Length: 351
Ligand SMILES: [Zn+2]
Image 1 (cartoon, rainbow, N blue to C red):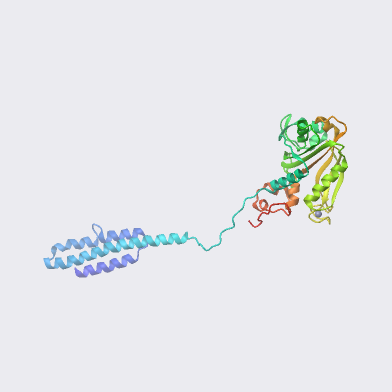
Image 2 (cartoon, helix red, strand yellow; image 1 turned 90 degrees about the horizontal axis):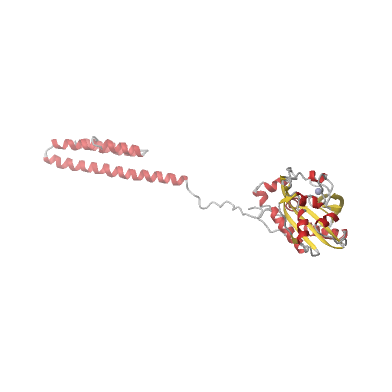
């Protein structure tokens, strides 16, 4: 029997070394300590022994059972520890790794451009006027000298909500709202805001931003217009190349498109300026007398100048963004781009 105890002890040790799962441990437990296990069976044989043998072998058997019990519970603990370590090694965080760069939020390039232009024009004496984006067609067209059946109405690709209500196609209606509301001269206002047209390609977006300007006073003439716009553009682009091209708008007479020397090639000619060396940046003119009348200005000695610019266009020039749609894609590379301009807040380009 002593030999049997030794054999069981050896085979138990071997079995315990070969475990690879908790199930293996359960198997060993029932093999050696279960009701019909090897050790309980040995206890059953004790009855046949003499009292002396019983004492000696009984104590050896107790030792074996104790060793088996502690061996199993230690193995279980060791096994769980091993699993735990393996798991944590898999999920381990290397505290010495450099952190990923944090993404910094910032104001949209259009917003930055808009705020900059508003501030600049405010310094030139302009007050900020506002008007509704849902506009009556009389304000959007008729009062701006675009009567019904005028081809300019079709040019605008208007979003009608329900005739006569539409989404304003330009910020010019604010001129009328402002003149009707503030009658005291001089009237000097800008109207920044969103406008809408059914148009969508590389240079057009169905929603875009304009800034409208209006200056009404006694004796305003084209010289004022030229001087004011030249000063404005020189301040933004730091260059002398500004030219006025005769043009047509229903609400101004005479009218002029304003070009600046191409900021991409300094006037030498490139893809952006279509090799002309010039970039069109705004429209302008002297306010048409009919528009003044619609705004309630009756005195024939009073005249006005007006201008309008597309904020997206200027944003693209200041931020060197080649496609207008990029301004609305929410791509962080565009949103964190810094303007090449001394007046713009510095935004970390590497953020
Ligand atoms: Zn160019």
